[in-house]
Amino acid sequence: MSDREQTAGLRGAGWDAALMDRPYQVASATLNTADGSKTMGFLFTVTGKETTVVSVMHPREFQLSHYLVPAVLDAGCACWVQAPRSIGNDLRLEHEIALFDVAAGMSHLRQLNFEKIVLLGNSGGAGLYALYNQQSRLAPELRIERTPGGRPTRLAELDMPQADGFIFVAPHAGQGKLLMAAIDPSVTDENDPLNVDPALDPFLPANGFNPMTGKAKYAPEFIDRYRAAQLARVERLDRKAKEMLKLKIGAKKKLAEEKSLALKMQASYAPIFNVWRTDADLRTWDTSIDPSDRPAGGLW
Image 1 (cartoon, rainbow, N blue to C red):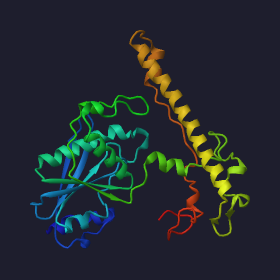
Image 2 (tube, rainbow, N blue to C red):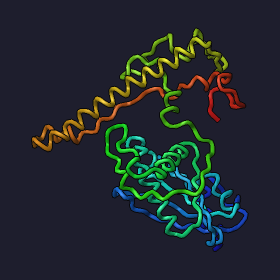
Image 3 (cartoon, rainbow, N blue to C red):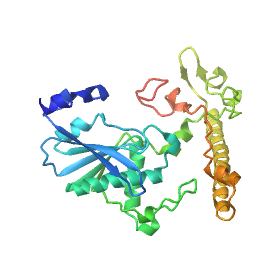
Image 4 (tube, rainbow, N blue to C red):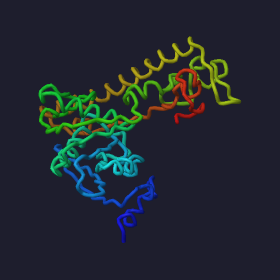
């Protein structure tokens, strides 16, 4: 059986082996991270003698079927496609901690003796790799000490091999900015996503939306009010999250002095709350705000 036939099953995952100009091989690896977690990846090669490897990773998706794998191999490079520790799970995603996954992959590729490692940051992977690149080039004592939630990162203790090159493919401005632009500020009650402020509702004709065409033309004044309200809603959500974290962290500190079941339960409790209506970027319906050839109502 040829290598192409052996890997034909990948066709169902998103790209067709027939797109390759030549047969190729795939080798999998499970890696231990420095903080005791695990990650995995697949190394695609053609000759097995490639000196440059292009690494692809997303903070919450496993991109085994990434559409650029055939192009990377046809260019004469190996391609490493890595999975994060929590595939499809935003609840556990902290980008600072995800750097441990990247570092494990980088160390693995260095051990395979590639002369050059190039990071390919696509979409959300761009932010992850950009953060890794920036942190890896700092003196350990200057790296981020805590996550926004207050968790120690221990990045100062992490071996972070540096990359030799960087490719950005369709990057966005970062998770925070992306969600800030998309969150619906018309929500007046976080427990009732259907309760909205009509003055901020992007789907009302009075505010510029045409329900017949699915397109909109928003006035500059509405856009300014909308964006200010987006910031205000995010600030409210941040305060709520920080209050929850404060209770949890406070209980952990008290446990060191006072052993009680109530404190232990509070310290162990990981509250979760829904953030409703997070796909309301005005540019989606009013394409004049950020012009391109995309259709109204979509991103692509």
